[in-house]
Amino acid sequence: QVQLAESGGGLVQAGGSLRLSCAASGRTPGNYAVAWFRQAPGKEREFVAVINWSGTSTEYAYSVQGRFTISRDNAKNTVSLQMNRLRPEDTAVYYCAAPKSQALATPVAERHYAYWGQGTQVTVSS
Image (cartoon, rainbow, N blue to C red; front, top):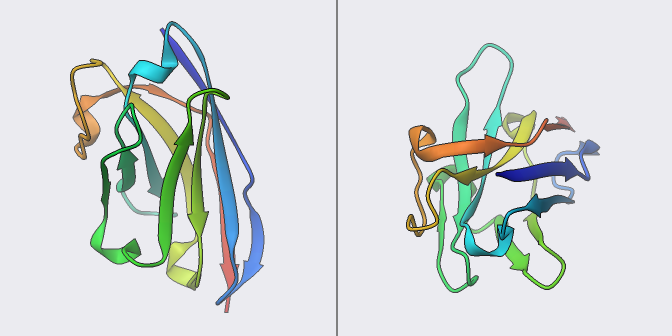
């Protein structure tokens, strides 16, 4: 079991920045990939970014490439999402998640994820 808790959401103007954090606890959280997903009102939850257990491999959704950066500190059991040049369409609840298996390196499909945080709201005003 892995427990996840997000923090760092808030209200920001378009063009601004926010940094989200995901604190992991439980059974060897440092051995799992961690991803960020988001869900906007009236839309399905979508993949944003993922990082493998060692921090050496990442994947990003096309819509956030070049603006968002995912990183991790396994000594602190935290994964961060630095979000720059934010747009109103980035407004959503952001969730961090861990996959059901430590063997999955950087899965992007939601069906691979078994552990979820409670989410943190990010609102970008125009």
